[in-house]
Image (cartoon, rainbow, N blue to C red; front, side, top):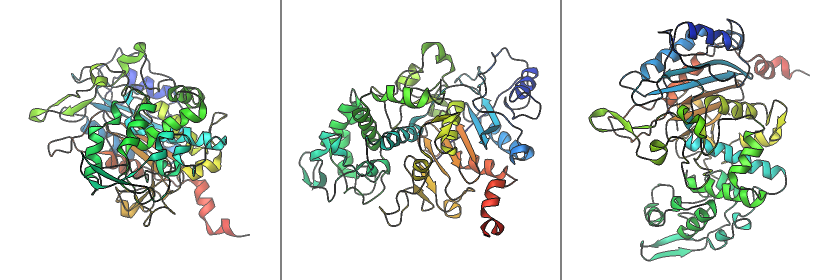
Length: 466
């Protein structure tokens, strides 16, 4: 699952920004496309991670320009409005660019610190919250969900009938937290055979609930489309249930837990379920394809009021706003084994478990519904075979995307993370904007020319000699 990106820039400000990236001309590129007319845009926020030159971290500057050129073109007059990309390696930002514009009128240049609706990139954050409570002994991955959600105690599996007269049976096994984290719960997920279960969910749509408790109660009434542990079916209900479990186990509402336990320690100051009024001018317009192949504003509350809550409840499946810089700090925490700047969110072995293919031992073959070259960890895909997936990458790389064309990947083997943020809701029609997430990932990887010396040392025959 993947997304897209764009470009913008001024002249003297462009050069100064590049120098500011890490205090020298060799630092990571900062602004956007080539220099243009001078701009009155205020200085952007401080670097979320230290900067370094592309070459010092094994990237080719000339090859990165291929990425920049592609995104400038993709955010041209007939493309996406704009976007932001950020690439880090070994904890250093080597490329951080803004492209195009943040507004539909294309009058306001995109800035690197602009704020995006992250949608399903929220799911990885929710998974971290669950694992923090597992480490504290308040949860176990193999606990039945009903231990924390009494509404699930009588959860049934749909076994035929009609929308008006459904037929039910008991599940073959209890639904566990592990099933929820790996999307193997059996909730209706638009898979073949889910038509009746999907119709029931439409009639009793839990997304209309006022809070997470209400969501869980409605989801429980809709039941399951399949037995837990029998298939991968990507569905938001899994993460909404987990967000409610975090509330029950921690004694905090979900938004407060994330703020106090994740965002504040990681200094993710622009991340949350709403955007404060003083920052709302930085929220990027969200588009969809309209008539006559023209972009138009999406017809949703966060489009009409940018920065407003995406759901009535704090959605663990897709409710966060964030920036490339904030999310880069979150990714770096995972790459560093659960620790960043002295703040320990997770133990190293818990992160290793999170980034492993957790479908192994549940499904055969242990792959997700999108690619037989991908498994699934606890909160994102895991690349099993780059060739089968059809995109350059490393076995063990981990990532996910969001509904409005946002995307991230973290590659432990290369010590690298890459983020691309756009704000367009694709409709799947032939005249819609092309989905460019995998193309962006391929362009990031083709620019990586020098191997990670620590990996090379670990993998070399000499390293294995006693």
